[in-house]
Image (cartoon, rainbow, N blue to C red; front, side, top):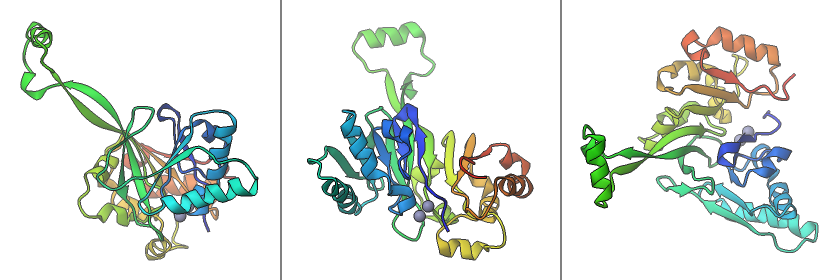
Length: 268
Ligand SMILES: [Zn+2]
Ligand SMILES: [Zn+2]
């Protein structure tokens, strides 16, 4: 079983992480970052593209894992053909590991590998800030002003990881080969992470076979997460709202629970 849909909107970045069935607010985010192609994450994409076209908004920009662009185009184009509309203006970009992609909102986007039943990846968005060059630290403001007036560039641009999204994954993504973007995901200010299974009705091994996180894996790796806040999503529909809250409070050590926020929209 899977949750009904996943679409997490980050308005400041004009981004939606996955598109779910395309909730209305997602239409107003230009960029769709797709973690993988399961329907609960990608099904609403034709609606996103068509709605933005209809409202004369800038064309949808869809970022996908490597090898998925052609399939995603087929999905959108089939819907367009069925409704007999003229060709739609939209972009599909495959983002590879190690590649930088700057979004129209100015955020820098990079991806990291995740481990699901099909090809998948997570994303990190970075703000880009100007910082005084290391060799100029300790100089007076007047000295720096003189250097700037002389035409010298006194700052470097640093990328600060602000928000990360795992999409569907097992805890195996934490054990992947050294990946700087994964390490950034684990220290981004906010991490949005799936937490499908919470109880032993599905064991840790079974959760891994199904391609999802188990809370016991989260607890075992608690020391890895340096984030200020962790938003937990994608709970199995077998759990009720009260089960989720009770289990998190029981299973998570207090220091981890203090920064976890379960996203319970639509859960009874
Ligand atoms: Zn999935
Ligand atoms: Zn899913």
